[in-house]
Length: 497
Image 1 (cartoon, one colour):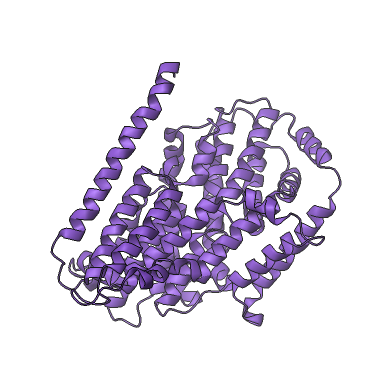
Image 2 (cartoon, helix red, strand yellow):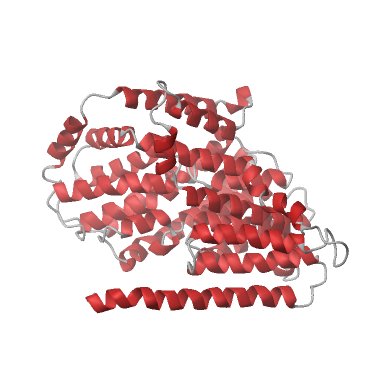
């Protein structure tokens, strides 16, 4: 790209973004001004309008995520404050009462879990403990190409329990993979380089879906299900329900990578020496790393034993953050943690949950699901066929979002609302919602639909065609495994009837 093109790009992007914002505002205004559809309250109509604008901003990235979150809260305050509490007429709620409604997402356990998880990720990665674990696992599996691919998968699984953030895990994995590729004297665009970087970009989301604390959408989904009257899913139960799927998917990913890419060498020269060098440079385990390991072990033990002590996982996460920043006992200070944390994601999660809760409380979710699913006749189909259609629709919806959390936050309440309107107590609502989550988090066809994939893509080792070459077969595997869960595994664990 020439210098003139570089200078011209910001202006062109600014014009594009302003145009998209104008389009989004026009869509929101049009929905607010149109006659209120039958069965929808005025407040529900306005929340739908705000959702359309917000989702459009998320899809197009016309404004930064942080700005979109602030705009969302403001628009919810104004829209709800100027609407009657119920129906189409009556006294307006007022902004004083609308403020806590618009901020409701910041007062539930799902948001607290996400915020504490990001704080834990920032604290633990400041110690270097995750790198030591990664290098040791890679050293154990050996330096043959196939063994290294397996090692990267094992590292990703290990980091899922250490770092409750897919983005943080990707940011940890990608530099390690780049170091391995370059130390072995291979270009990033080599077949080995492409395969390793694709693993680093795909695995964080895949492994995260199997652990309650492994990805931000997981506790949010639990919150949605609990709010809808479904049984709460604890840390161990989530592992039972989804971790076997994760292992099977990872096995299929390993098979696909080692078959679709023709590696230039069977064993990477210099691999063992490089890993030994990295471990020597780390030196003995520091006191800070030991404290981080002890706190992490305690936290995982408390998460895993929630059925015994009945302490909310979010409360355990807050305790872990407290221990990590306590003087003398912790591993970092609050000031340092504050600088390292991703506050934009925390703001976005809270605002997104607020939007979803208001979408449900104002009747918008039930109305939209009725129009989309009930009136289309999907609800009259057998349960399995209906679920498969929902999973298929999620495939196309997923391409509209660059954020998995934003996608599930926007879509899940509508699906739950639709399922509740069917009035069938035997309907496997939890199973269907978990299936939707699997599609959203495991779809890996183009980089832009996943933050971890974008981090790996930024290393400039693979292109979109490379990812599609791997992602399309994996999509078939994903749906095949979901079918196995529906008809074989989930009935065994009690979430599918």
